[in-house]
Amino acid sequence: RLKIVTIGGGSSYTPELIEGYIKRKDELPIKEIWLVDIEEGKEKLEIVGNLAKRMVENAGLDWEIHLTLDRREALKDADFVSTQFRVGLLDARIKDERIPLSHGLIGQETNGAGGMFKAFRTVPVILDIVKDMKELCPDAWLVNFTNPSGMITEAVLKYGNFEKVVGLCNVPINHIMHESKLIEKNPDDLFFHFAGLNHHHWHKVYDKEGNDLTELVIEKMFNSNEPIVKNIRYIPFFKEQIRDLGMLPCSYHQYYYLQDDMLKKELEEYAKNETRAEKVKKVEAELFELYKDPNLKEKPAQLSQRGGTYYSDAACELISSIYNDKRSTMVVSTRNNGALADLPYDCAVEVSSIITASGPKPINFGKLPTAARGLVQVMKAMEELTIEAAVTGNYGTALQAFILNPLVPGGQIARTVLNEMLVAHKKHLPQF
Ligand code: NAD
Ligand code: G6P
Ligand code: MN
Ligand code: MN
Image (cartoon, rainbow, N blue to C red; front, side, top):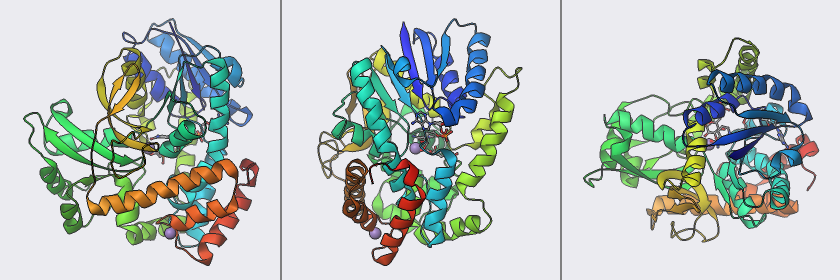
């Protein structure tokens, strides 16, 4: 029977994961689930871990739930390791959002300067985890959710030299559910072909007869003004531009295609001390109050205020697909291997893939339209440099990545924001 480990077990998302495992109890013979955290997250781990125990017991299952601060003890002989940690917790995210905004730049968890700093803090930790895995559970799969998910996956492949890694995100599933509804079809009767990078992908939609429905979905998208994920306020794209592109952008493209409008909204939130991280901090406090209730034995509805809807469907389905060689189609971050002809072979891309016992097999997308190719090549180069800087601690490489990022203008401002963030996050940046 399986031993599954979750690093960052104190996350408020953990009940979501546990629910996903319970739903799949007949396909996943689980014996033990180990939730790992660190000293700073000890209290959260206790609270959410006890809820996890009640959920499992309530479902009539004999699974052992272990709570620990000892990562090595947890990793010993694990079959699957999922990662959902946040170095520096939400206070670090507040800095990632507020420092760029204080200079008039987009402040976001995975995009722009904030996303690059999240990578700088996270890469050393994930490489440490990989080192432990190679020693203690070399055959386990690493299922990474930790953001920036695509860059973290690439760091594991390139610098950790560890092949059994898959990066996940819930955004593609949110698009699939949302757009199926828009055209009144069952998602199982459609094929969504995704290609690009994590939080920077596009997709096309086909039906069972092979008809290309992309144009239809694009038109429907303009008639709907619901946000796709809770954390991104909806602003409609330019119709002419998206029609010309011929693919559906993901929600995160709003930061690039509608940069000034998005910045304006963010600056309003900044002025009110209501950036996304500040709001999430309040939601998190409410969630943990609920989690403490000994009568609560299921995932509470309030968790849907977070951006991670369908998080567990992605994680638990991936684990089941690998374990059972289900060959289901999922959108994952994995080594490109030529699926996107416009990007390096050895980089991580987020692409529709067939999930087998030997991991994801990306479905070839071929060449992207010129507009997407140009942007994604800049973004990938920026990611490669960000990861390199995170590993080496080289200031010049970090500055290079900053200047290349479309959300950071070149010039003195790049240097100023970089320097200020290096000081603000010093505690979590031993490599610099
Ligand atoms: P959080 O701030 O609650 O952090 C989760 C836990 O990680 C905390 O309990 C913290 O103590 C712990 N932690 C920090 N450093 C650690 C370390 N070195 N080892 C072990 N545990 C450590 O974060 P959250 O809001 O629950 O999000 C968790 C992570 O998942 C973030 O990185 C977030 O960006 C990511 N996320 C990704 C997706 C996706 O689509 N890929 C969706 C949702 C969340
Ligand atoms: C989406 C993204 C995640 C991101 C999350 C933020 O689900 O896919 O990568 O971490 O939103 O949500 P939050 O509620 O923390 O703002
Ligand atoms: Mn994501
Ligand atoms: Mn730039």
